[in-house]
Structures are given as structure tokens and as C-alpha cells.
Image (cartoon, rainbow over all chains, first blue to last red):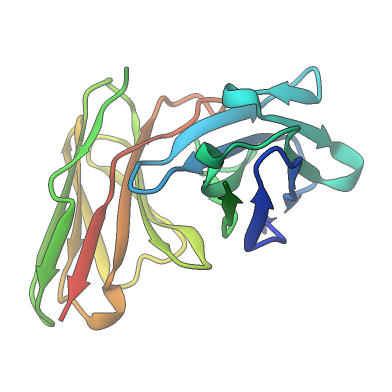
Length: 115
Length: 113
């Protein structure tokens, strides 16, 4: 069965530090991959997505993610975080052979940025 | 811009009550979803619908039912609320294509006393 693992439950960084949040999925076929962000008190919104082509995907607010098929990973990165990046981040996978648009979410990583 | 509207941000109900959570989207999306979000567990899919009057169980459908009489509206029903259903409930919608992301509502924080 499909599953998504986010290894870090809570990450604490100082402003200007570099960020990498891990995401691994289990599915042998072709996948669509997403990162969503939930700022405090707000709804989930799409950060970036990968469907095909260049495995390095750029999203909003300076975030990027790299799809490494051999490692079943889709890690999220940002070279220099800001206090406003404090949020919860969710990795999600949609396996293309599954029922229409059923997306599996990871358990989330809470990111806290010290000013 | 897509708008997914959930009828209540906060709701308090009593054990045994029948509870209705409403969700409306304004972008003519085929797919609609109900999730619950609990700390450390991420988002877990309760039910989804890919067309009017069509529904499929998600990963945790027990104790819930849904209704989709119109394309824009998807209701989640707690038949007899229990304290373990205290949670944040999120509604989402998307186009039918699998490469389309989901658009989420603001959530309903439901407390069952």
C-alpha cells in the first residue's frame, strides 16, 4: 500500500539557516508528488508539485524539492529560512494507478524559526 | 482563485448528537474530500467523492457518512458523535485530473463533549 514518511516531526532553526525536510514514499509505480504548507491559523496551500520532467522543482517563497526516484524521496529545501516560514509542512503522494486523485499525506513536520 | 468554504470554524457538540459539517466549492471541481487532521497523524482521508451522488470510503470512514447532492456541496455527517471524533476537519476539492492539486478550506475544529 502507498505510504508517505516524514522523518522529522519538529524542526527548530534560526533565521538564515538552511532547511531540508525529508519525505520518503513507498510505491513502485509512477507518482505525482506535492508539498503543502499550513501557516498558523490558515488553510493548507500548495508549495510545489512534481509530475514529470526536471526532478528539481521550484515552488513559491524560495522553496524547492528534488525528486530522487532511486531513493523514493522528495525532500524539501530552502537555502535561507525566515521567521515567516514557521508553519507545518506536509508531503503528499498521488500514485497514478490508484483511484482518481486520492492523495496520501505524510504526518507533517512542524518548523519553528527562531528570530 | 479557488474558494473552498466550510460552514463553521469552531463547533461544539455533545456525545450522541448527529453532526453535519458542510463544505462548498466555487470552481466546478469534480472531486471533493473530507479529512481529519490530528497532531502527529497528518491528514487522514475519511471519504471522497468524484461526482454528484458518488462517494468512496477513505482510510477511516467508520462513524462517518457523506452526502453529495450537488456538485458544489459535500457534507460530512457524524451519525452519533463520540469524544474520539474531536478533531480538526478539512474539506478539499480538485479537478479530476490526477496531476491537479487539492484546494483546502480553513477547517472546522470540532469538539465533542
